[in-house]
Length: 291
Ligand code: AMP
Ligand code: FE
Ligand code: FE
Ligand code: ZN
Image 1 (cartoon, rainbow, N blue to C red):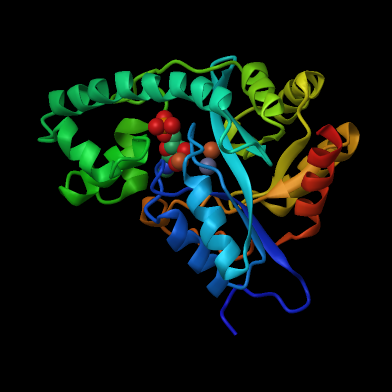
Image 2: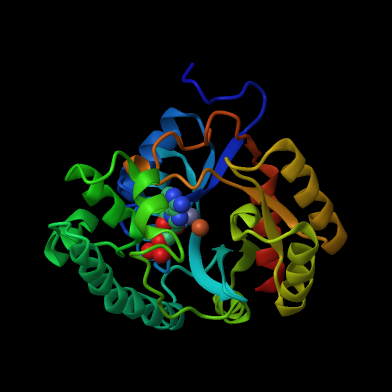
């Protein structure tokens, strides 16, 4: 049996990036890997982009893998980067696409500025090379990191972020973000369930996180990503307590980006991830009730 299949437990992965954003596998490849790992459901959650869902759903129906339409929207809360996941959205919703196109334009405006900053440090890279690296999908900082690695300017993607691309780093360039409440609203209007992504990476203290989530719940947040590769057992406990307090669904996923995030596998994360199928049932039940 392929590593990653858990005897008796049907597992899912609800946080996966594809070539439609900063992942290196196509939706079709993602579905095939998920099948090999014996997952029974996945969600494609590209940054500010929903176009990868169609291919994944089509291939998923052939391969017998349930694909929950998804998205991950970039927002900012008091200077911190906050990602809001949306599940069970209408993945062909033209209104949602229109809203996301604002964020896509913000990326197009920012990306050449990152190239300029990197060039000012003496790195010989061009915008065309970055576009090629992204292969037509939404361009994200991991594409810059990958190119710096390929050209031998840094040893790996982590070093590229640590030295240059991290928020506030020397090659960091701000881009327009929606407010969290706007992203939550966009997801709800598209029939979806808004979920707070990877709470740990936001970088807030527990009490600040609690207060932020309390506010987000008043905006319509319905879930929190409890299971995530970087979450320790203690983190999982903390986030479960928060989920219980506010009646939130406890979701989870690997945040797979293919070669752009080495060491993270679909379904397994960094080896210990295990997200049970009943999360999907809860998401679908709420989505049905909202319709
Ligand atoms: P962007 O949306 O283009 O600003 O890029 C954000 C993406 O960069 C995230 O979704 C991650 O995939 C990646 N990322 C952000 N910070 C780091 C980091 N410190 N190390 C590795 N990848 C990172
Ligand atoms: Fe990413
Ligand atoms: Fe994220
Ligand atoms: Zn992600």
